[in-house]
Length: 294
Image: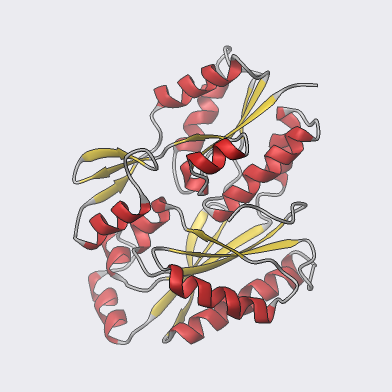
């Protein structure tokens, strides 16, 4: 039986302590803050990120350095027969495409399997734990890659954006639309499914936003996953520097879905770059795993 290592980047929300506890390997994501390079969970914490963001720092995302990725593969292949690498969605970054090209090199062919899972944050985290379980069940790197790519659309993230400033900065809203939206207290609800971050709905209040998102995942379970009771689904609450409201949202979600253990995880910092602090999100994913770490 092949010995398979599971590798991801910190976009999945798994930081080094959790990774070590679960025998998962993680590459830290780089960020440029006012043109200075930082690595997530190495010299950049969530608290420091939001402190910098809310005081006007210019923050840019970047993909892992090619050399860092290859060094990690080489390190793991000294101990393991195969490596399954699960980067963030190919639609949101070029890191997946770059890694796939590297894995085609003769040195890594048949040893490193890059998964185009088209997920990020909590849904990507679930894929990592699915991969870990499949490896423990004796599946090969090729079989794990095939499963994760076959099921890549079995998830959805709905995000309520609290402030429009950062969508405007990223060019997703024009200044005029952002100003009008702020005056009217409009809270956009975005959707991440597969490779795209798209507009899903608009709300005027936090209560209305949460109702729209709860209705959306209920419809997903019934119509997309054909599992109206959600017996094969995992529901998660996420946020950007908004733990208190996330706890309240979890209780409201539990009232709607009382048979679920609903966990809370922060959204990836790469998403936070574009939507800013104060966001709330809910995810649902169809999975054979019933529980992941909070």
